[in-house]
Amino acid sequence: MRTLRHMIGKYMQSVSLVIVVITLVVIVIIQMLNEQHLARESAGRTFYQMEQVLAENQRELDSLEAEYKQTCLHNTQAIAYILECSPRLMNDCNALKEIAALVEVDEIHIFDKSGCIVAGTHPEYYGLTVDSGNQISFFKPLLQDKTLQLVQDIVPNTAEAKMMQYSALWSENGEFIVQIGMEPVRVMEFTEKNELSYIFSLFRVNVEAEYYAIDVESGEVVGSTVLSDVGRSAAAVGFKLQEIKNDPDGFHEKVNGNTSFCVFTQMGNNYIGRVLPNSSLYRQVPTNTIVLAVCLILISQILSRAVTGYMNKYVASGIYGINEKLRMIGKGHLDERVDVQSSIEFAELSAHINDILQSILDNNRKMSYVLSKTNMFIGEYEYSLWNKRVRFTEYVPKILNLSEEETSKMTEDYTVFRAYVDLITKNPVPGEMDVYKLPGTKERYVRLEEIIEKKQVFGAVIDVTDEMCKLKRAEIERDVDALTGLYNRRGLEYKLNKLYECPEEMGQTALIMVDADGLKGINDNYGHDKGDVYLKKIAGVINNFGIRSSLAARLGGDEFVLFLYEYDDERELLNTIRTLEYVQNNSSAKLGENISVPLSFSMGYCLGDESADYQKQLKIADERMYENKRQRKLNKV
Image 1 (cartoon, rainbow, N blue to C red):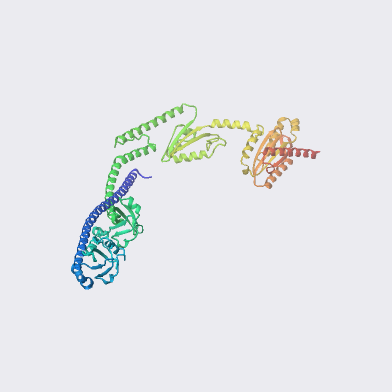
Image 2 (cartoon, helix red, strand yellow):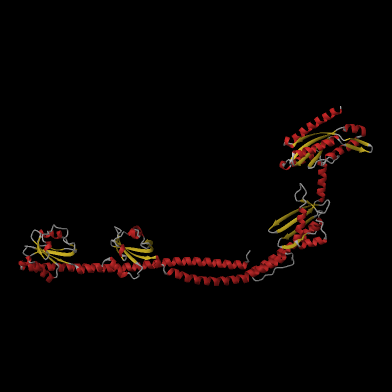
């Protein structure tokens, strides 16, 4: 068992460890939540800046496109005017190319009144009409309204699917339509700078953070810093649209095989998201946790040692002092007193222990006084297994028949006293509870009872010699035939009932009925006193008869019973019965001086195998005994 100092130290260490672990777990959770909060704030600021840049770029792009459209229209008007002034130039491809270079346009196309290209800088386009494709059909309304001046958005052209911006209008004389085409280089360059992938690259301060733009309707990745993911579905990358929609505060998801913290917001028709791997998001958490753990462990050790030292000084030491005094008291030093004054509580405890000790001493004196005034010899003893001394009242040595030297040895060492008690308990009185015969005495009986509780033994010993002697006399008078000393009918039935409670322990058995022959003639010829001697002689023959166990009884008059048991086999049992038959026919009895008569009796027996009920065995044996008596009379005749 551990000491209090050790337990306090262990307890403080355990509590400190639990506190440190709980604190670290809480701190780790707080750090992770804080990192997520910072990631959300960073994403929010980035999304706001992106939104502002996109809005500003869109305004500039709209302005540039409007300006470009106006320039395109002005160039068309200028070329229409030149061609109207010099109609011969319409059929000169080289001249048209020179005009195009001069006006800074890329293509010039001349449509006739039916809407067919008949001239221009690109002969390969000749023959195309306003019905030749979706792009060129944009200008079909000119055939219906010559006042229109149309400028088309930047789209792939019909012939080569090349991104171009076209404008067209009628000449002033209404004879032809002039269409010019310009490659929107500046607009395309500015448009590329307004694409989400380009915008993402501008805001990618943390190289480990990735940005994604996902179409709200289709779930397709339309922009990303991971170019290989552009065009893939959000699910293929690792996103769930429902989660993006319902969790604007951020969520953890496995993106391209890496568990990451994702924050998304909706901008127009797209979800814009910032994705940061957990390895980057929580990079500082392990380091911070280790530093904090070291600090907490140092602090807990200092506090643990301080508290443990204080407890040892003012609590454990006081308890040790009280325990030492109680140990001395337990050893029998009842004059010891407890006096620990390190605190008010210990002072009160010391006083209470002293009061209890004094009360015990007073009770012992009172008990001894009361017992000394009674006529009963009652003794009490007490000892504990951790203390060698034995305490008992003055009547114990008298009851146990101890000398002064034996008493001294037993009071000093409980093992000596215990050995003597064990010796007593080896001689129990059959049929009596806790009653024993004292060793080394002829007729001395004690009742001994013990209570063992928490390694403390308390016992009471009472002299019951008179009671046991009276009981034995009563048993003899009740169960034993006064004339022969054998069991009477009552005693026989009692013993047989006891034996038949465990039939498997009796071995081979036989029950023999014996009847004295010639008792009436002896009584008539020699007197009844000689008849009693004759019965005693027969009782002497059957008492303790046989090589194994036996039980003999006189049922009354001249009838006897002999019960043989614990024989190993039937052959051995039958040999014993044959011996009794030999005695039956070859014995004599001396009834007095010069008086000797044949010792004659009839007998019948029943083996145990014939019946398991001894009453039936008696009946069978009785019938066979009378048959034997009849045969013996016939033989005499």
